[in-house]
Length: 235
Image (tube, rainbow, N blue to C red; front, top):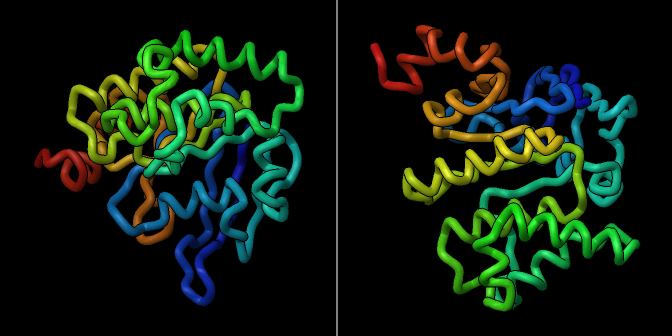
């Protein structure tokens, strides 16, 4: 579904990513893990078209997207959920969700998607008329993911959904993402919560100093000596 081949990217003269190559198959739940400041978020921003690569190729569903604008990439079926959610705090839950469907011109389809999304997130259905700014941290994360689903994506890029959440809420968010893959949505997740991530995703890539240093199945990486020592605190 998605393939990055030797991608370099950064901000102005500051290089962040170097020769990044990774792939995500349809229906997979794949994670990109690693320490702060190594380019995980930049990788997602590059796929979403918010950062333009200086080298390499990004191919999605058989076509190159590295030169496309973000709105074009969204229409192809890629949704990007940022770490802060980018919610409109003064607007209601319903209004935030409706904005997520801006690229869908068929009102009947948008209404059907909204119905499905609210069934998946019953808590949001209860708070449909409530301002997003009054939601709890976990509810805001759920709203960000739900809004990402409103464009009916085939692939979701999700950045640090556990950021700032209590452990119990983190598990709930992760289980929701896992449920999305069961419903046919492919997920590429960026996370620092390595232990929980590797227990729920199919595969993962380890990004260090702007380059992929390791890759493998969750079970393989959980047994890897470097991962256990550097990210799980197990010697």
